[in-house]
Length: 274
Image (cartoon, rainbow, N blue to C red; front, side, top):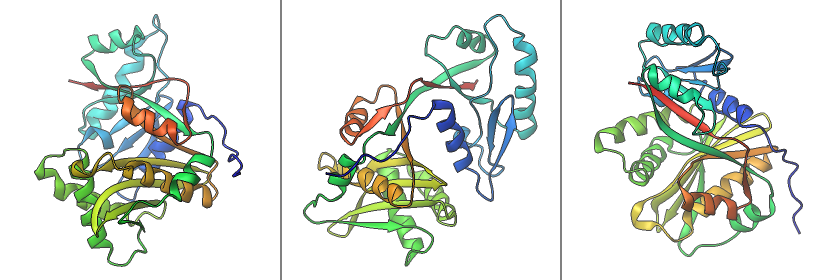
């Protein structure tokens, strides 16, 4: 029997901080602001790459204007829409204050951390007929072709508009230059069908961009790439392996629970100023 990995149950704030730092590429910056971390991409205005993560926000009766003014000023200076990721319950009354300031809730998510290594090892060893796995990073042979295949899977899995496909591929090419980032790509009969991204830095790993092309779902491919990426993370010394999942995505939550992931306490509420 495989022993459980020595993984602690980290706080949501710590996981958010790690994820923010995982975006610190040559083109992107991460700086401190309001007790949190400000992620900024000078070339890409998309909110996902321009957000303030886990700021220390005031109590309900505190000086809100004094807290919010420097945050708004920082985003204005960057020419970006104010975008905050807050550790909060969806019914937190402080969200109403932000609503009055022009913010709207655009998503609620949870984080899940791997609590047992046994299930991911068992799943990663399972053979699916006709399916081959490959690890893709900056040292891969023909990385540009691999980037195109990864982008094709991600664009289809997440139902992205055709105009975004080229941007996704360009983003993956940049990722492959980052030593901490790698991908697990599943091919069925040579055709790319499922993917998971792994960012490992020190003793922690974030799994993201887990998806299967729409015509190849319900075959266990997402389980396989997720488990394989987790096993790779454990093999290089990660003690914390985690991922984020939307609060209402019950199918994904069942999948990850089946692989030994458990919820970290707390929710993450994303708000964007209109």
